[in-house]
Length: 333
Image 1: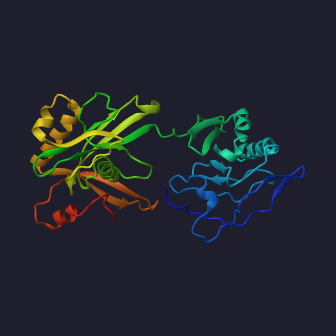
Image 2: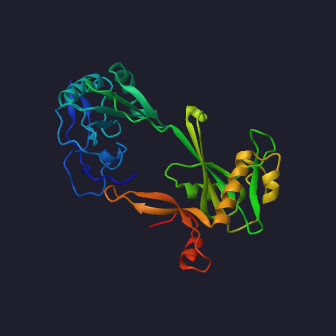
């Protein structure tokens, strides 16, 4: 994630008390020139548009405000005792409704799990969860439909089409393949904060111990009904091998070899979709084109992003050709 635009000092506000019991401990809302803010970072800032709440009534949660006029409260940033939580939540909701706040988000960590029943009793719904927290939300306006974005609903994987100068394709047969003994391209799921190209290069090295560099995007396969009820996006990358000696990962891979491309295209235990990936790549090579990757910077958000586009393959010996051949991962600015 990008760094936050607004920052807050680390010193604490005085503790708000209810019946002599500590209610809330939170960070100050005054701005400073420190590079980062724990409380804003704790809100999982989305598109770098979260800012500190200037003020809030005593005995209420503060949270951080997003660009959609919503509030996010992080239990690791603002702690509240279980006994006092219902009172503080009610005061906070009354304040947010009066101030016409829209979406209210509570990021509840394991240490504050006792908050969850009270939040549910007050109309909050589950949005998503990870190992250490659950995110709940409530849409406050009664005159408009809830404009809450769905959580991630697509699993992203990569396949690596690695072809050497002898027109051989690197293929693997998995230990737990859907069709026993079938051959496929190396690949796997993209990890959080990982670029597609880097994921493909990593998966090839993990499964076969072969190092590669990026050549071209080949195809994108999109389907629904995958694991956990998600959709599935599978991106095939053509990679050029930098080494060819195979040392397979025994935990995942039963067999691995360099297979002649013609054998691959006619093998009875290669799925037709995988054959088409190779046919597509060979057609790109015949036409002298590829789908290249460039990294750019968003002018406002200052976020880096990758742009994929069709380009002509540079002639051998040109400066752009030599620059491309030196790339071993996602292009950098």
